[in-house]
Image (cartoon, rainbow, N blue to C red; front, side):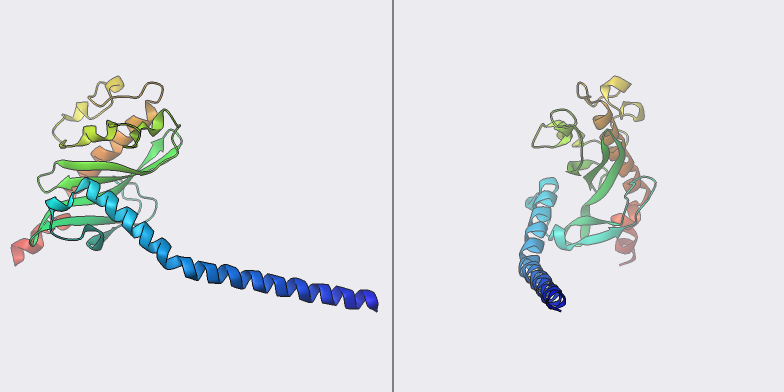
Length: 212
């Protein structure tokens, strides 16, 4: 009988501690949810402004988003993503669209591609990757200026055959010992330009502007 009572007491105490722990975790989550969301939003807004500085538009980029479907053949997103529009007055002066290079050396490379209304790249930034430190991670702006080499490029400049790394006869530098990584990013950026060109009216709201 004593053993049974001890077991019951132990079970009750264990359940109580579990409930208390769960309650504390929930309380901490609720307490930190809003600050974390605000911090993430601020970080994302800052990254968008690296592509389109505040002086280049008069809207809040972070508040002017639109949904992009997953698994588009060109953007290769694994789940729906968010694009953003930069505006001057009522006109869309540029867009920022997410893209994924699924053929990185160590897996997916997620990036943002900013494109002006004239089809010229405003900037490219890397959102996430698992490439080799000291080699493939040079795609990050904080590690090298390589990603800036996309600035002002278009579908026709460079020529289609030059939209490749130097090792493949193109004009974009290939990292020593890590050619796979820049090759994947170059291809993903070019495909993002193709996506923008193919969906130009919708992305830049041209049809809507012509109707008004």
